[in-house]
Amino acid sequence: MKKNKLKHFQSLLINIRAEIAGDVEKAHQNEKGKEAEHMADISDDAARSYDKKLQGDLEEQEWVKLKQVETALEKIDNEEYGTCAECEIEIPEARLEIMPYAEFCTQCLSKMEKDSSPDQNILNIREL
Image: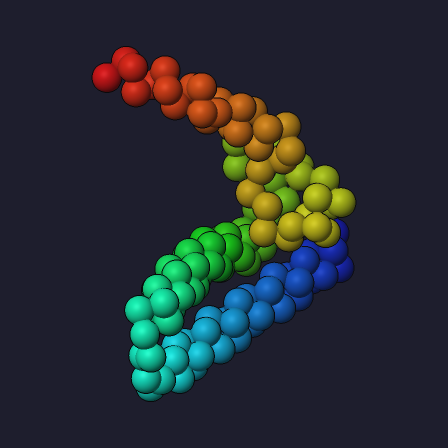
């Protein structure tokens, strides 16, 4: 991959990392504010519990995304960026434009998703 394209993708990844860090900080500040609120009744408590669970799930997704971004930035430094971690062919730039932290080409990703389908998981459980 050309150096100017690498710099472009590096810039995209750095912006994504900054955005994730900002979102996490905002969520943390919001949580502090909510803790200070007084609980009025059980329905409010249930709504807060649901919101807290949802926020935790979203934060986990952001954490996974952040790790992928960090891995992609390391690959740029090691001159390994843009190569599928499974088949080691070059990931198309169009895919990297959409998801600059992509680790796999679409063919390998489709194969992995197909291999981990719910039917396959049921078969694995039955084998135990």
